[in-house]
Image (cartoon, rainbow over all chains, first blue to last red; front, side):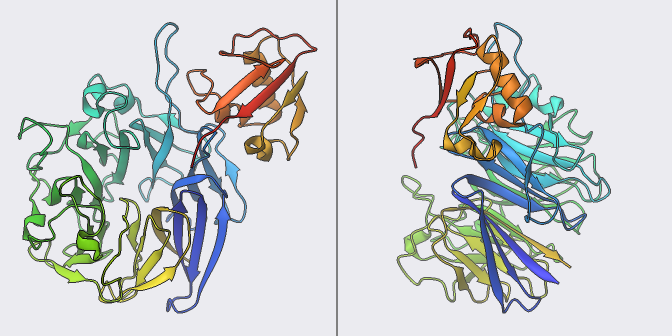
Length: 374
Length: 86
């Protein structure tokens, strides 16, 4: 058994690997040297197919796929792309593929991809060919949901956090930044905003149906209908069938607040989750509060939070942990990993109680994913 | 006709920077290029048939703004990866 930690960076993909005890580590890469890798995910259904969202500085975006866990790569024959506009009309083009998500466990070969500008794409042949999900990409309200071109986050409005309900393959959640959380119960044919209870301090209407800014949304893989969200305006939990988010981040220490980017769930315990708070005050520095990095864990579904900073820099830790750049493994005790904009990968093998730096001097880390292979 | 390619596209052509392709327009030439080197077109031309922001294409040293540019067999097409930063 090997543990893989897939590290997507601004200049390539690195694959860290370890034995079952996580004592001996190796590093493989860079794959796609010099190209930006927003996300790389191993298919949990076959343990071999690896997809990577890749874009070079000069070239257009694409998806590469590997049938042998990254030994060899082949580009998608038809990468995610918007439909060509009718003659005389302007159309959209994918700037970058941002998020990759395997489909439901029973639907082998199905994958989803989210892009910037916000678009949703699906592949039914393990990432070889992609087509737009018309129910979202052509939805008459999509333009209102995703905002105007050029507005939104610095890297553009983005579709991320594609979560396929493990109990219902027709039920998906997505996050739009800035647009909000949406869900479909018919495989993407129709969509409903799901933002009640979420704050949106930057919107004039406190009860707006959409326009919110989810940073990372995670559905629990084992517990039915448990959803957590790290939002631009707080940390939330949603227990379906309820439709109103509960701001569990209000239980964080007031001096720390509940702003951040990643949201990480325990693979087995739906009451345990981790966040990595960032400074969202003044001009939004997006770095650890006071330069003192720390994860926070809840063991009671957000009712209380505990600081976890042992081993992390006690001061002058000025980095950002991006929304895709923190993940858990499925071992016991759970291992945690986060990557920084300074090119470090930190790990904890005791569920966050202590941290150690696993890797230095990588390019800016965009994403972290884990996989266990045999 | 002769097509000169920048280094970011070398992985598509087995590191050949000078290749041959045919077409009466730039659009046809790029389609032929993609047949010979699958995937190369989408990295330089987007789904709306626009030349990507950091790519420039020159025909006989004159910049071609769109894919409608007419070509003759003796023309030389130069694809340039312009500055992208970072």
